[in-house]
Amino acid sequence: MFNKRHKKGSVILEVLIAIGLSAFFFSAIAGLMMASNKSMESLYSSQKAIWRAQEGLGALQSMSFDDLSTTENGLVTYSNVSDAWSLGSGTENFDDGQSREIVISEVERDNACLIVEAGGTVDPDTYQLESTVYWTGSTGAVHNRSLQSLVVNWEDSQGECFRPTDAGGIDLDWSGGYWGGSKQLRGVWIINNTTRDITITKMTIWWDRPASKLQQIFAIGTKVWSDSGPGTPLGLQSSGVLIDTLDATIPAGFTDDTHKIQFTQAMEGSTLIISFEFADGSILITDPFTP
Image (cartoon, rainbow, N blue to C red; front, side, top):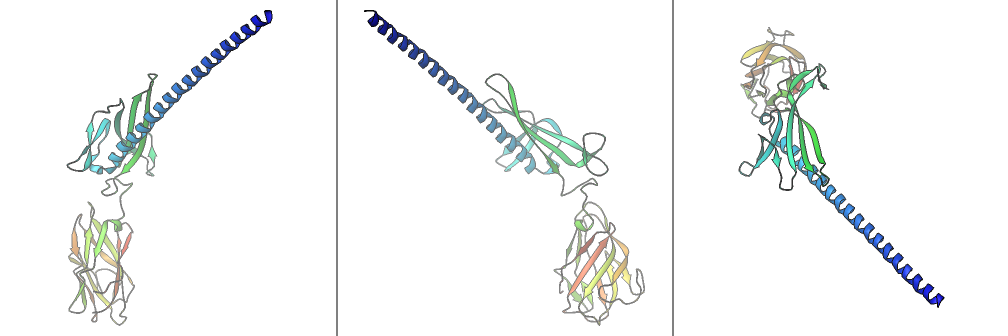
């Protein structure tokens, strides 16, 4: 009788233990699932924030430097009409509770053009771009993801740090070159693409007709060298001699013909190379061409 009661009690105890373990097990599983869901939700929110921050930064980088301006509270707006982004004021709020803010800041550089936190000079050709996305998590904590970049005004730099060399601001067009009177090279165009005056100081000309000598060079509407002056060296010159010309200034944004480069003998069919040296020491050389 005792054994029966003992066995019955053992069975009940085992059932209770099993129920307790099951409850603990399922409670643990439920806790893990809740934690996993929260983790997945947090990861998803973080990924969306990173994507939106990248979109904001990319929008700023796609804009012209002239269309950017400093702001501590900005937004970017896309227009289907112009197929472009524009900068505005305010914070952009998304339907899922996230928000995006754009910050554009000035950049200071030292005398070596290195970026410094303070004590430098504001660089007119550089902005720091920042795109930040904010959201509130399930615990009430505020999160953010932020991306930063620099943008430089390469195309029309105003300061000294990114100012192109004089040669870098000049284009040469010799495609329309021809021989006037068989001895005078004409139709070589010099194009100043910058917003500043650029000065030619020296020239070198190579040609493949050794018997013909260089006699005169005209540029920017004036004689800049001849065998009797101005410029040096004096006398008729052979191919490849460095000519120190009278300084010839190409005005900002100006396109001008060299007018003529004269030789002592007929040059039709000759191949030439012309080198221009500018006031900053930079040099621009044409490809070989046959007028």
